[in-house]
Amino acid sequence: HIAGAMLLPLGSIESGAEQALPDKDATILVYCRSGRRSQSGAQMLIIMGYTNVIDMGGISSCPYEVVTET
Image 1 (cartoon, rainbow, N blue to C red):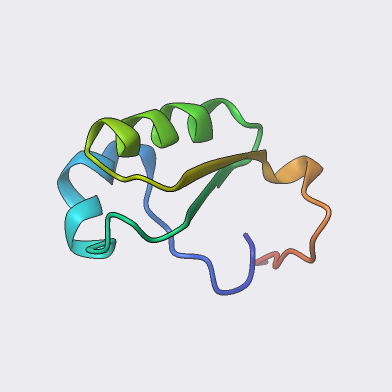
Image 2 (cartoon, rainbow, N blue to C red):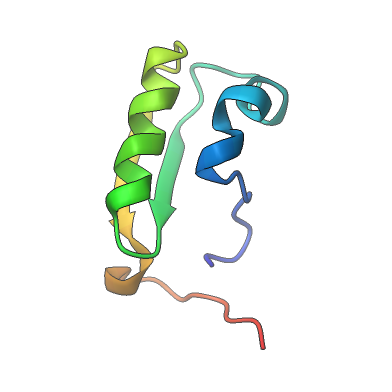
């Protein structure tokens, strides 16, 4: 994962996004491992009224430092 990122699984977006992400105008960067779930998640957030959602795609192609857990 990206250091400092908040984990909000795709299946939890509808039930948990408003509590985890109360500012619907904040910039929200969405990513997953390959890019497929991030696209779905970003679309869900937009439908829920979030105005500044950016789909970063898959972390496998992320140019930034990532954190791995063993």
